[in-house]
Amino acid sequence: MSDPSLKPPASNQPLRPPQLMAPAGSGGGLQLPVTAPQKLNSNGSSASGSATGNPRNKCALKPGYSLMNWIRLCNSGADLSGTGGRLVPVSRTELARHNKIDDAWMAIRGRVFNVTRYMDFHPGGVDELMRGVGRDATKLFDEVHAWVNYPQLLGKCYVGPLKDNETKPAKESPQITNVILQPPEIVPRFDWIQQRSELTLIFYTRSLANPGLVVRRKDLQQLSVRVLVQHNWHSFDFQLTNNVEWPPKLAKIGSETGKIELVFVKEEAEPWPTYGTHVSNRLDSSRLHDETFEYEVVHSKDFNHDSFELCLQSVGQKVLMVLPAGYHVDIEVPLEGRVIQRSYTPVDHTYLRLENIRSSRSECLHFLIKRYPNGPVSSHLQKLETGSRVHWSAPRGSFQLSDLTAHRNILLLAAGSGLTPILSLIQPILKRNTNRIESLQLLYFNKTNEDIWLKEKLHELHTDDERFSCTNYVSQSEDNPQRIALELLAPLFQKNQPERCTYVLICGPSGFNTAALDILSQLDVKANQIHVFRG
Ligand code: HEM
View 1 (cartoon, rainbow, N blue to C red):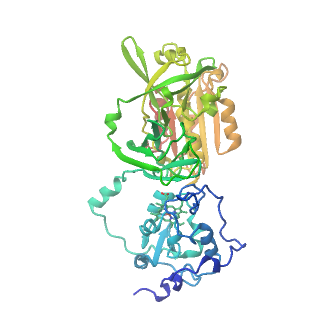
View 2 (cartoon, rainbow, N blue to C red):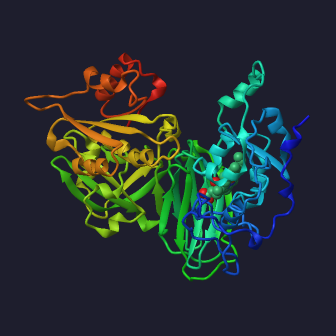
């Protein structure tokens, strides 16, 4: 029998009209986040905004069900938990009984919430929220939007802790285990919003999925967007309602949310009835293996005594490419009738000394390249003049940002030009809100002081966020040659030390990588705590 005191609140009846509710209270109630751009209806009026301030809105909420209305309801004194203010421990059996639209409970991280009244306020819609009711929805919640501040939004809906004292099934059947071991494929979901003068195409992947992007302009209304997520490519071919300008005003990938936003400026500033149409497909990745992209040099300049910066944009400005963090492209160079390839990870333009405004534009990719006397690719690239052409592959890599989720103290080991993939990870790791990082330590190894890249920039990063630190080591120093060694790394892995590193990312020449792996194995660091970037 279910406990009669745990019945859904009487107020599950239709909501009181919002204007009858008390205004948002001042004392510790919910706060309204910063307002975001809003979705325009075809008549140009605005639909409701997003609860986290993101300019997305899966469902146009009914009038009277905006975030503001929810805050009012929360502060109105209504019994949203349905328990009359009592905290009631909830068994899993009890939780399972509350699985209906008018009686909906949900457990997240061991806490049970009555989401019945939140149903129509949920920006993802009623059907989505219903997927999590009557059960422990922690995993589902995190997969969709781990960043949503549910304790704050659902504070008044808290029923009580989830009791975990029930007998668990003895053993899961082998089939079930298999299903759990294979993570479900992420298929990007498309959405769009508009303002009078802008159109935003949105692709939702998954939290920390670290997607990449290739956008190709066919003409002012036809675009091909390819999303790379977990080694799979998904294509979206668009026929837009009207013309947009190229390149997009913004191409943004939320490293934590896995959300991709492409903001285009409309040629004519007016509301569109719809974005247009699109056809989507999952692509056969093996067929893309031989695909190359043609880029041309827009800027090339010495960076230090043996390295240079190179900025390239797609020929005819047709392509915009954003790589997943930690990924590279293979640049191809013709040599004596053959084609040879080397891997390079682009760097953010803010790391370079660009003077040319054009080269900081979003459709350009920037590289920091070390010149090796016997390196045919780096020597070839250095000789290129403005307008010279280069071919490279689609983004490649095996790094999974989600592997780092459980780790709060991360060590970065880089040598020489191996710094570039590491650079692409620093911001995504530091910006992570889920299981926030405590320390991100970079040990950067070079031959001489002159070889060290970005000394000041990395110091600035440390000044901006003290969780990040960079220590330089030089091997060709007369008084104190420093190399990667057991004594150097051992203190970072000492047991019982709160800042003990639990994950290591390594990138350098093969000798350096091998030495690092050898030392880490002596320190008992397991293979699943290490990622090596190999070019
Ligand atoms: C566990 C079941 C749930 C599912 C399947 C679900 C699904 C969704 C979906 C599909 C969206 C649209 C945007 C996106 O893809 O991220 C969304 C947005 C949102 N959901 Fe949920 N949701 C669930 C539970 C909840 C709960 C319990 C809350 C209460 C705090 C919540 C609050 C929100 C908010 C605030 C947004 C807007 C996020 C933003 O704009 O950044 N969701 N949800």
